Amino acid sequence: MRHKDGHWVWIEGSGAVVERDEKTGAPLRLAGTHRDISDRKNAQKEMLFLALNDPLTKLPNRAYLRQELEKRLMEESSLCFLFLDLDHFKTINDVYGHTTGDKVIQVVAERLKSLLQPCDFMARVGGDEFVILSNEPLHVEIVCQKLIEGLDAPINVSEELFKLSVSIGIACFPEHGKSFEALFKNADTAMYEAKNNPYKHYLFYTASMTEQLLHTSKFDNDLKHAIEMDEFVLYYQPQINLHGNEVIGIEALVRWQHPVQGLLPPCKFIKRAEETRLIIPLGLLIFKKALIQMQQWQKEDFSYGIMAINISSVQIEEDDFMDRIEAIRKEIKISAMHIELEVTESSFMNNPKQFSQTLQKLENLGYKISIDDFGTGYSSLSYLKQLPLHKLKIDRSFIHDLPRDRDDQAIAKAIIALGKTLELEVLAEGVETEAQKAFLIENGCDSMQGFLFAKPMSAEALKTSLYQN
Ligand code: C2E
Ligand code: MG
Ligand code: MG
Image 1 (cartoon, rainbow, N blue to C red):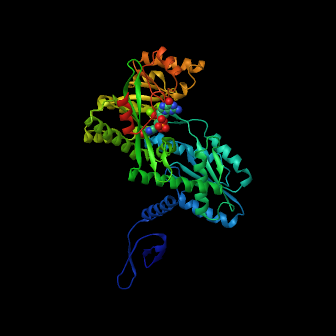
Image 2: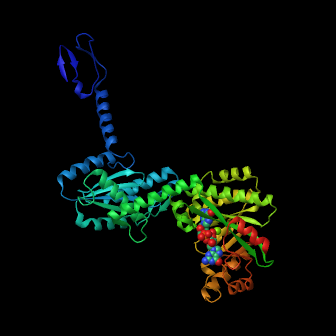
Image 3: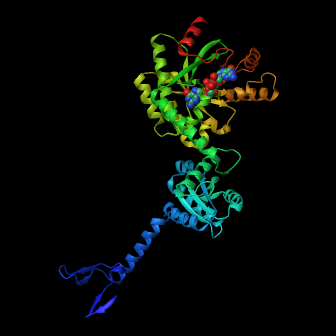
């Protein structure tokens, strides 16, 4: 700022706006005051801060991380890149809302940061993703352990206690990558492996992880393509009523008619379809196929009781799940009364309130609901009582060693008694022997399903076999 001929002239580099004579370019007037200038300076500072830091946690962001890493790669001979991702964080956002989710992230960021050395660098690179740069490869496992244990104590936000855990992938410079991109990608891959590893919360990157990732990504593509091309068929297994020895229903069980590997059972693809959420379009495809089969059998006057269709928890958590199955049902014109939806106990662990509301609405529409694989989850009995259920299906792991095994005897009897108390029908899955059947009849089980009666089979085979009996 200079004083010239009684006028204040501002140096433009300071950020002030100067009006100039159009011809001579001489400064005429300042558009601003002292205050404008300091505001402007603050605004500039703030913009610079926002360009390099995350507004929520005030931690460095991805751009800052890149700058810092590239600087350190020039200065250091070794370095560790830690990629951290919170486990199941999405559930917090889904259940408690984003405001609570944001507060939890802030506390996590502060807590993790407080466990680091001043020379470590920590950035937030995504919703629940953080990166730490550590210059001490020898101690990196101790750092990971500290971070994992640091999250052990619950986080108190909005009068709720959140118990969090984290998965960490580690890529080391120079052996696992020499650039920002390579270290980021490889640490991310190792984190993904750690997330799927039941024993380790942190893992170092290895080349085989990339191979595995490529394999998985090819599988996902194939599965997506298979859904688009409809490479799925439904097999059907009868459910038998013990008292009348007649078929009371049929369970639809999906198979993938793989162009190279042949007919694949659900254990080869359902879990992955759930992880990738491809189960949502696949589940709708299955539902539609089952209803088209029902329509066909209706035309042929073939009666078989209800049609049981397996529904994954991922499907139920979708807001429009009910609307979408209802649209299919109305299009194919099948009464909901003839459809039973099989859900597993684990479905209501994530979001019990939403789960029971959805089931209630489905029941109001006339659908029947059964709990599949009962006994393998941890459902609270008082909660079970509030659900609009029709049937409990005892998991086949409790049937397998009947009547020999005393523990299984006790469990099967207890589930049958529980079903009776709650006024539910009880079906035993996986009945393979006459001895199992006799035990179940003796203990008052209502119905059964298993290889003793019939294996799952194609629609045509099922119809032929039922007509013969
Ligand atoms: P689930 O719903 O409990 O189905 C029963 C499974 O037990 C079927 O296996 C059936 O073939 C098998 N099983 C029936 N009776 C016997 C028996 O006497 N002995 C033995 N050892 N096994 C018996 P499958 O078809 O391989 O299906 C496995 C699981 O995959 C199903 O368990 C279900 O959780 C899932 N799944 C199958 N189809 C679908 C579907 O359309 N959608 C979804 N979301 N999941 C499905
Ligand atoms: Mg089932
Ligand atoms: Mg089952």
